[in-house]
Amino acid sequence: MTVLLVVAKAPVAGAVKTRLCPPATPAQAARIAAAALRDTLDAVAATPGVTPVLALAGRFAGAEDGAGLAAAVAGWPVLPQRGEDFAARLAYAHADVAAAYPGRPVLQIGMDTPQVTAVGLAAAVRRLGAIGTDAVLGRAADGGWWALGLRDPRHAVALRGVPMSTPATGRLTWAALAARGLRVGALPVLRDVDGWADALAVAGPLSGGRFAREVAALRRALVPGGRR
Image (cartoon, rainbow, N blue to C red; front, side, top):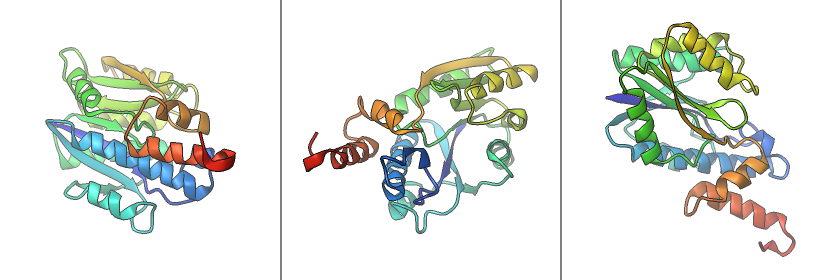
């Protein structure tokens, strides 16, 4: 059974989604981050045939919607993130899952793509399990990536040599995996939510989710009279 690993940061005002400020305040940005994470966790929970695991930086206690987030992962293994930078934290998260679930493949996502669905995640799991595939990578529209799947998660050590959060991160990650002799398959390209334009673009096609509601609430607050 594939481990579906969510790597996330507790949505504390001033510590998450700071590129949404402005127009958002730090508290509004944290609410949007919390909504994005809740939608992501819901999609993971609805994905059949996987073992959900959360690698968390920080604590939900004191975070925006902390109680709701804690309830959403009740019963999940929650691993503390460790490492000196983001690349190291990703590599360690995969290594910790490999130690806890030896022999299991891992599909890892973050909290910046609240548009993910259980159907899409199940398709990514199947792609990782396809004959002739050792890894899968879902590129992001900004040049990064939103999903990484590894038949052997110990290969995530390759991320340590990849600069994160750059327009070349996706390309360099693919190259690092291929350099280890892995056969890499592509997942669909998605748009990460970094700035306000990203939030509007991602929220637009969504309906009913927490993320879309929070973005709509902020958009209304920015318009004189609170309409739009």
